[in-house]
Length: 221
Image 1 (cartoon, one colour):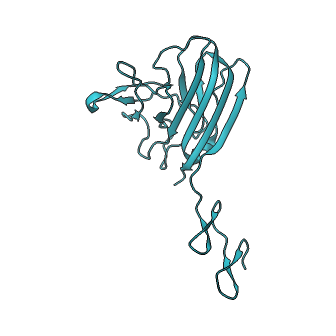
Image 2 (tube, rainbow, N blue to C red):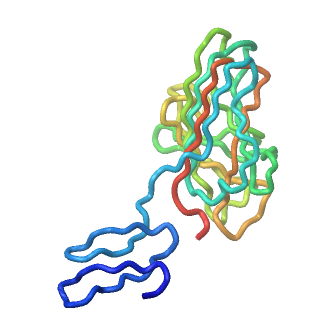
Image 3 (cartoon, rainbow, N blue to C red):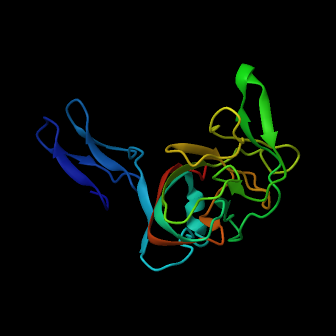
């Protein structure tokens, strides 16, 4: 038998060799015999932090290995300790730098399928430009999808986001289940555009912060 193989009885008079599978494969059961299969896509915990001190606590730092995941989910809850400020978010790119170039279109859907946009922003506005008062609890979920190969930033590239309601801004909402497609304006890539962490852009401070990040999907091919 070769290295990594296992043997099983298949009904013949001798053991049958099942050679080693690929890295991360899982052993599954077919109709009658075992086999190696690709893993089922599941969420992987990438980051889990708690901060009870008064600080700006939604910052994962640059995590370049997160670029291998196609979808990232951010869960953040915190108590607003000081500062009546809007909540804006920036993402780290594969170079380990925060994306600061203007976002050419952060868009939402309007009635009758007319597309509207707020252009030339340098961050994702989570609160429609409105401030969050002190002594409030924030519960935030953001799902970030990596952008396509041809979405290289500038030139009117769009991110389609959830609209808050009639008369509201078209920025990313802070509602439960927010869905954002972020794109990388500072890196030109022939592959999917990776996002490697986030940082809250706000002078406010928070206490009792919990931040968890999950990843799923292969972004390397």
